[in-house]
Structures are given as structure tokens and as C-alpha cells.
Image (cartoon, rainbow, N blue to C red):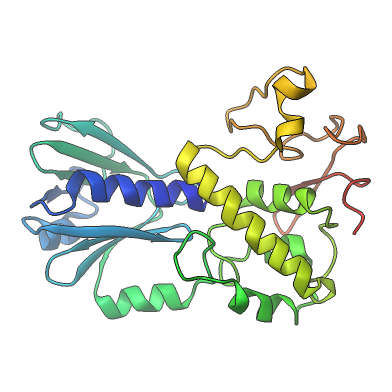
Length: 269
């Protein structure tokens, strides 16, 4: 499932291509036909993201709400849109640009009140302006659940997925099995600040890079990462491989229904 930086990039792309222009909206597949009819012929007024949720605003206080889930994805293009191929849930075009959405978990039209309710169910997002993470800290500081599981709970912290979870804990040397109530406020502030930096870098680069300059392939004389995830990371999907910092074998386990990766030597705090 895409992590939050991907959704923020999609919001930016939708705003860039369609913002301020009248949009033709359709559902070639037919499953979003009713919603497409509501949005068709309206001007796109902007787009935003909160965690893994994308919102595109149309004139008249109508909001397109998309959650990609495991299989959803956008395709963008320039000029007149081609004939749709495959199961296209949503098609947006304006004669200059087009976008097609396939396989989302959620694709619906919301009123402002319904949109506010979605935001209300989500925790703070490190990529949203004005967020400081304090609401997440209040819940984490009272919880006996592991910090590894809490970081993935979108009701507590929005946008963080498996990669950012594993990497921020490694970068700060925090053992993933520590309960939230054992995390100090100083440690939480360090986690939040690191997520803000890493996720903003992800928006800019379009991939997740978490290794510090001294641990890049060039600095260490090692081969670059080859993986469909892309990006240079410390522990994510590096199970049974030597830690880039201490050489200890990276461990993995199923944790809260997701694969957790960590270094038992570097993450002893």
C-alpha cells in the first residue's frame, strides 16, 4: 500500500494538471458512474492529502475522496485522453491533461461534512502544514501497545507505513517492541521530527531514502539497493542481511499483521 508521501505527490499532480479548469469526469468501468455524473462539468478547485487519503475539491463543495488501498493507482497523461483500457474506475480530462484511476479501495463523492468526518478519524499527518504530533503523543504515551504497531495505526498517526515505521525506529535506535507508554516525550519528538524530514524528502524524490550520507552505497563502497521498492534503506526488507551500521543480522517477524524489520544490536533503547 502506498505510504503518505505518494498520496501527497498525487494531490500535487492533480492540482497542477486540473486545478482551476473545468473537468470532464467519467467512469468507463461504470462502478463510479453516479459519482462521476455529480462531478462532471465542474471546475477543480484544488487537491490535498491526509495520510493515505486523497481529496480533490470541485466547485460547489463536492469532494472526490480516493483511498488507493493495495491495488489502486493513477495514470496521468498530456493531450487528449486515449480510449480507456482495462478496468478504469475514474477518468478525469480537460483537453490538455488526463488521469485514469484503477483499482482503488475507495472512490466516492463527499460533502464537506462527510470529508470532515474522514479527517476526524485520522491522526496527525507529518506532511500536513500546522501539525505538531501532539495528538498522537497523547495516545501513544498512554498505550501498552508496541511503538511499532502504534506507528502504523492510522487513527493515531496518518500516512506512516511499513517502510517509514521500520526506518525511523532504526535511525533513532528504538527497539520496536517497547510499549508506547515507555517511550519518552523527547523520543517521541525525535520520531516526529525525523518523520517530517524523511517524508518531505519522499515527496520531493518520489521514493523513500533513509540512509545517512555516511551509509550510502558510494560512501560504503557497496552495491546499490535492487528492489521494487527502490530507495536506500537500513532494515526494511533486509532480513538476514548484515546491518549497514554494525553488521548484525537484520531480523524480521510478523507484527500486527505486517512484516517488521529491525537490528537487535542498534535498536536496544
